[in-house]
Amino acid sequence: QVQLVESGGGLVQAGGSLRLSCAVSGSILSINLMGWYRQAPGKQRELVATITTGGSTNIADSVKGRFTISRDNAKRTVYLQMDSLKPEDTAVYYCHCDAWGPWSRDVHWGQGTQVTVSS
Image (cartoon, rainbow, N blue to C red):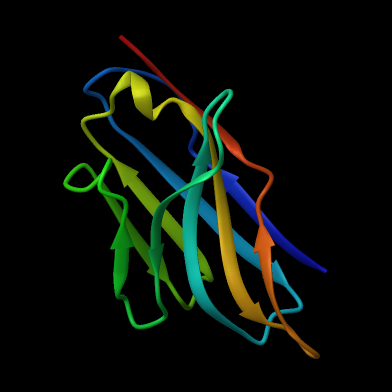
């Protein structure tokens, strides 16, 4: 069984910073893409940022220049540094990874962590 455990969410004032972490554990042989999505109330889940094993990143235009994604392959952990936060960044943030298990390649999701930005 694969688990993605997120941490680092919370309440912050506009202009502030938060750092999200997501650690992957379980029956994983290798992790390909890792990343973060978010879902605000009444809206669809949207991509925030992804990062490949080699460190290539894809950042959503809405957060480009403010958010940074990174990963530690040895620790199987992905991070999202969020700076200059805005009220519109308020959402549940979900970690995901695309990984090979013993028998198949699958996408796994974390349980989500709430980020609330007050104005």
